[in-house]
Image 1 (cartoon, one colour):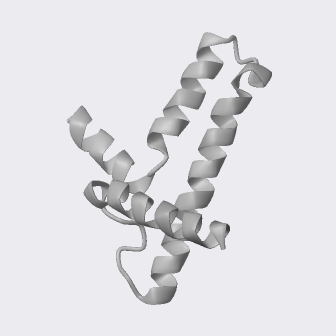
Image 2 (spheres, rainbow, N blue to C red; image 1 turned 180 degrees about the vertical axis):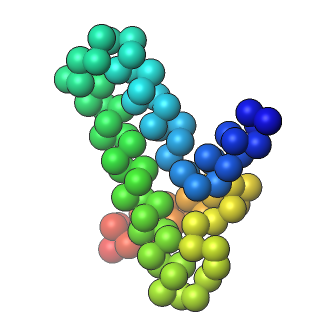
Length: 89
């Protein structure tokens, strides 16, 4: 049963790992947010990235807007490759 919940959470939240790392850091460091800033930054970057992916897919009429869990690594590679090319121009 726990696996199903985790699978559901992963499907709905592509930044679940980053979120859990942030929570773990807070717990480990007595909820001192300053000590966990890198984790928060990483989580926020992740949310922005997948938000952009979802918006782009919506504009292009691609569903689901958020790629399936199994496809996310490939989608991430494609976006990073594209944005590295654009930033080098």
